[in-house]
Image (cartoon, one colour):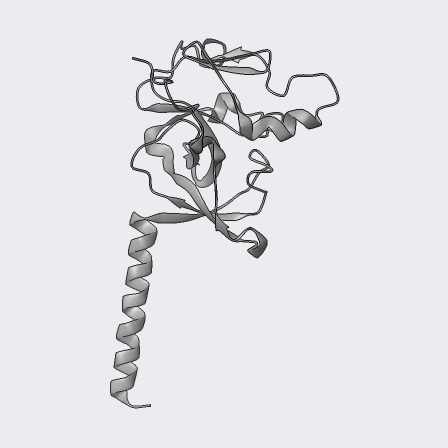
Length: 195
């Protein structure tokens, strides 16, 4: 191999690494799911790509960093936007006084045999001492509500903590492909924003 071929190969490798780095910094971030909070939507040890967001919407599944440990990442569903009043009563979600269906939880709820609610009753006042989601913050919950026991610590997150939206799974290979969210295609986003 000639010196010219080595230089050419090195330049190509540098360009590939540069493009990959720019994509990773500006477009997406790989995330490993380290808990069971979103099962079965996302499984523990699954690896996904979180794409940078332009706007956070109700029921987006977002990756975010722990404010106390930036290396620790979590993935949960956005239930409340800034200004939303959120509460649960009798296993029903209310946003700004409106009943909101959570079709992504139906499989869980059908499997319950103990007679206990899937999501315990609460409101933001009880959890955080606020009546509505504060400005530049979002209220997030895992789909696996009985396992998501750290709502007080990780339920109210700041906008700057959000890394991106879970959009693509790449490992294990059986999960390879786009992460679809049927909630986005339904009508439950309509009329939720507080005026």
